[in-house]
Length: 336
Image (cartoon, rainbow, N blue to C red; front, top):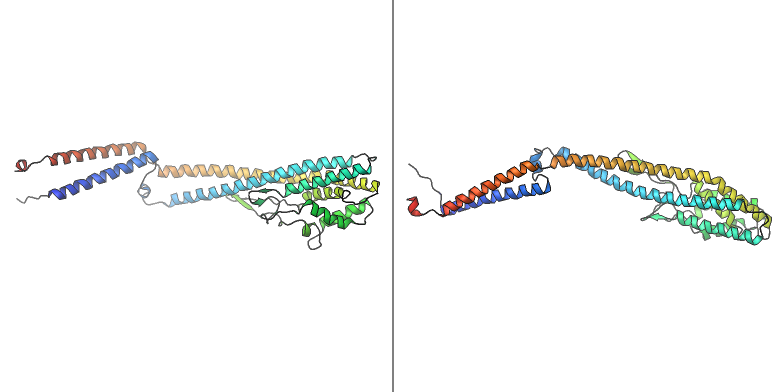
C-alpha cells in the first residue's frame, strides 16, 4: 500500500494559507456588516452592472441640476428683492412729486429734485447688485456691472437738456436719450454695459428658466427715466422758472406712478420664475431620493445573512486552530 504524506513545512504553509483565507473572509464580512453594502458588487449583480451605472449617472445629473437650480434660485431671489425695493421707492417718490403743492418755493423744488437724484443713485445700486461673482441685471454679460453711476448718467443728460426752457422739452429730451437705439449715443451706448436678456439655465430634466430682466427692460428703464427727469432741476435745468420746474417734477411723478403697474408685472415674471425653480428643485430632490433608494437596495448587504456567514467563518477558524493545536502535540512515538 502506498502511503501519501506531507512534510511539516508544507503542512504549516497550508494551515497558514487556510487561516489567512478565513481571516480575510471575516474581515470582508465584518466590513459589509458595518457599511451595509456588499464588498463584491459584481458578484452580487452577477456581472450585470448596467442598471446600476445608469442609476449612478442619473444621480450625478440630478445633483448637477440641483446645483444649477440653487444658483438660479439665489439669482432670482436677488432680482426680486431689488425690484421690490425699486418698486416701493419709485412709487413713494412718484406720489410725493405728483401731489407736491403748487405754491412751494423754488428752494423746496430743488430739494425735491435732489431727493429724486438720490433715489436714482439708490436704484442704480440695486440694479448693480451681484450674487457671488454674477451681476443680477447684466443679462448675458453677467461678469460686467450693468450700469454707470448716477452722476455719469445725470451729467450726460445735463448736456442733452442744456438751453431748454420748458418742462415738456426737458422731459422729451430725457425720454429720447433713454429710448435712443444703439449707436445714437443714448442710454444703451453710454450707461448700460450688460448684454441682451439672459441665457436659459437648465434646472431640471427638460426644464430651463431664463432670468432676462435688465435695465433695458421697459419697466426698469422707465423707472430710471422718471427719476432722472425729476433730478434735472437739481442739475440746473429750468433754473429761475419755478412754474416749469414744478411742472417737470409733477410730470416725472406721474410717469413713475404710471409705470408702477408695469414694474409690478416684471416682479410677477421673476416670481413665476422662482416658482418654476422651486418646483424643479422639489421634483429633482424626490427623483434623486428614489434613485438613491434603488441604488442602495442593489448594493445593500443582508445583515442576517452576513451575521450567519461571520458565525460560520468563526467556527471554521476555531476548528482550524483546534487542528493546529492537535498537530503541534504529535510525537514520533505516537506516529510509530
